[in-house]
Image 1 (cartoon, rainbow, N blue to C red):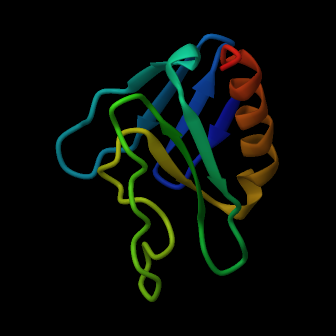
Image 2: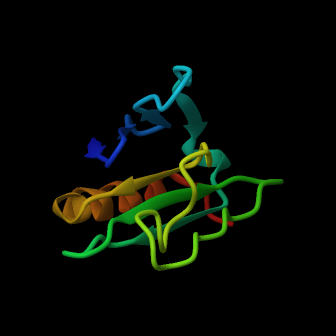
Amino acid sequence: MDVKGVLGHISFDGEWITITKTPVGPKPAPVRIRAADVTASRYKPGSRLFHGYVQFVLPGSGQAPEKAMGHAGGGRPPYQDPYSLSIPRKSNESAVKLIAAVEQARPSR
C-alpha cells in the first residue's frame, strides 16, 4: 500500500511503515516505523488550495506542530519532521486507506 506525497511517499506492508522523502539538501535515509509502535496517527486531507498531511506519533515524540497559514507550507508539519509527509489532494483516498490499515495493525490499547 503506497501513498504518493508532495516530496516523497509512504508505504505500508502490513507491519512496517516506510516514509521516504525526496531530498532537499543531503539525502535523508528512509524512516521505518513498526505499526505496533504508533500511538496515534493524524490525517489532514489536501484541498484544491492547500496540501494535507499524514503524520504518525510515537511514544516519547509529540505531534509536530503545524506551520502557520499564509505561506506555501501553511497548515502542515515542517518538512524536517521524520514521521509526517505532505500529500496532494489526489492522494486523499489512498491516505485514508493507509491510515485505516495502520490503525487496524496497531494493538488494542
